[in-house]
Amino acid sequence: MSWQLYVILSLMMFLEYAIWGAWAPVLAARLLGPLKFSGKQTGWVYATLPLACIISPLVAGQLADKWVNTERILFVSHLLGAGLLFTAARQRGFGNLFGVMLVYSLCYAATLPLVNSLMFAQLAENQLDISVHSPGIFIWAPIAWALVGYFLTGWRWVFKTGGEGRDCLFLAGALSVIMAASCLFLPETVPAKSGEIPILGAMGMLGDANFLIFIVLSMIVAGLMQFYFLGTARFMQDMGIAAKNVPASMAIAQAVQAVATFFALGLLLSNLGFKWTLTVGAGCWLVMYIVYVGTKPRWLVIMSQSLHGLAYVFFIIAGQIFAESVAPEEIRSSVQALVFAATVGVGLFLGTQFAGVVMDIFRKEEQFRWRGIYAVPCLITLACVIGLVLLFKG
Image 1 (cartoon, one colour):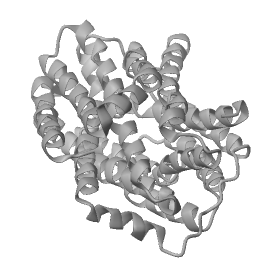
Image 2: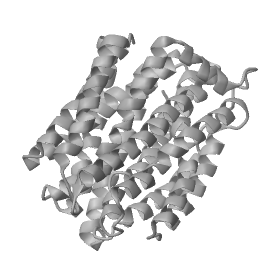
Image 3: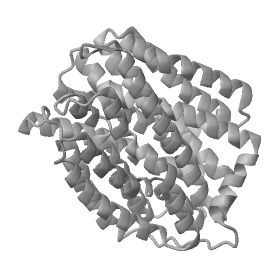
């Protein structure tokens, strides 16, 4: 791979996930704290991205496979998203914030599968092995999450903005502006323009039992991540970790994710195959939830963030590579869109609602009973691990 191609694709991956990582891990603390939203209201704000992912990736995948260059869709989506994030940072009421975040999420969700499909298309065009070269680009996603988390922590130390918490949205907006500008330098990625309707071809792959099992289990396991995103920041604060230190503590996950993506993902896929790599990934989340159920000691809760990073690599990223490995070239974007619609869309939406309800059930007089809350995803993840072992062939 030429260094020019590597740099521009890596920058694209870095900025795409830096934007998401700027607000997703810590916005819940603002909603549950200064804005005094309920667990259900917080769940609905976090549900905006999953809701958008049910629609936007499929539309964007159709456009990219048939009509519009991928890099152009990325440019427009991120430019619009920047303005919406700046607007969201100024909202205090639930209705206004939900509306702005929903429109923003429709823009951002369109870009998630397209950064993958653009990367895969450019690797294929340059006759490069995807399983060998894609981890070196995927690594910049967790690095982005980790660095943006540490940057936000440093910002809060210096400027004392942690109490109000809206700084995460301003940071995400600034990163969106930079991402839009960088899209002007992405390599031209033209539509395949096949005769069939791309999204129907992607849907047709659900007729394969193994691919259907993969989609269903991925949807469930990914949905349970909302227990992590909605609860971890407040959970850590309740464990005695200062709010200004929470972003850096959670960024341990992305630091480990970066190392695992570069050094371990290709190794596991080569030696274990998709079936057992996905099983290891889901198993890491299972162990993390077991630690959460224990609630202490504090250092173990902090170190368990590394398990989230490992799980993301061996389940989510490995799943995206699996989808690429079975997708026909002419519907590559639509297959990636289908995976995102099922996991980040339907899975995270249902997971958000489910997590919000569970958090309200186990909330008494503004106090969360975290052991009961995290016992729920723990048991469901265990069932999914068993399902992967018994049903998925890889």
